[in-house]
Length: 373
Ligand SMILES: [Zn+2]
Image 1 (cartoon, rainbow, N blue to C red):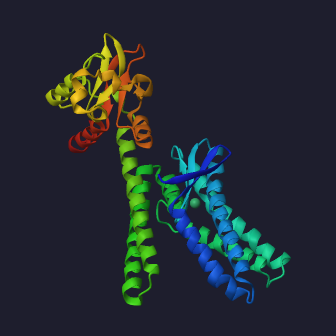
Image 2: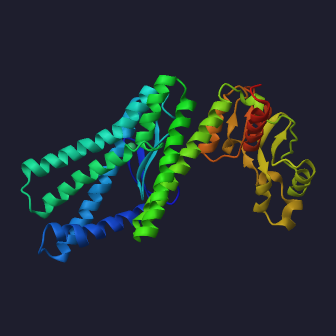
Image 3: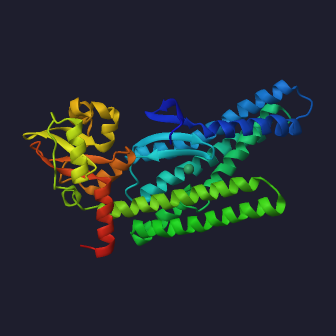
């Protein structure tokens, strides 16, 4: 997610706040300060209500963060690195760099989140019932945190993939079928059905009851539907490419460009060959890669006098892969780093080919039309 603010690092995991978080923080603070606290405890000053509202909102988001840390610590323990934790309007996400390798690991990592929230609820609840005296604003805040954590755990347990409940459900089907793709297909189908139900309910609430809460349901349903679809298609991609070497997918009919070529000559090559990129090569040494977008860095009238080395991506900044690498691994890396193409080089430094997203899409198309092999 872009538009995020990096807050801190916890055990090496970057924690970020997305701008949409400020909206939910603001809404929480307002409703706590203007309705929840004044209803629970009467006769305090506006200043006290607002201070309590802000502190309680912060505690709510600390609870979200602790839920995500619950997932993250178990994931790290299972050897799954966490890229970052982002807090946003609907809660939080701990982004794993790779998916859990087996259903048991997925079950452990997923269950850790709701379990953490239940534990927090239990702690706050005990504090409220056994230690604090009811009737103070502090004890009402603690009670609110207990309830929020129960709601958070319960909401996340809804079996709509990729919510925690959907993931737990997938890990169970995965365990019994030993087929992750099939398990995901079932979990995503149930998640989609539930998200359509939520969106439908949202419309009913808006049109028949005039309650704007329906907008949240529609938005949330749509978000879950999208997330489910994209994680399923990513998995299909991964499944198609696993066990297939880069050398089978890459383009090998290479037209290269010399480092001293001018941009005018490069433009002629683009027009003539209609490729999206050319490796810049001299002799057996690869210097970098030039794409058609690179030309735009220099005004048109300077093209005849500008060498390609001025605009190309130099080798040290290129993604370089081995022809023997598993294509699934490369695909995940290109997607997560948002890289469009990679240079394929042999161990001795010779250029073997180019691998672009277009090559991968073409391979998937052929795979779908021609079937296996
Ligand atoms: Zn969770």
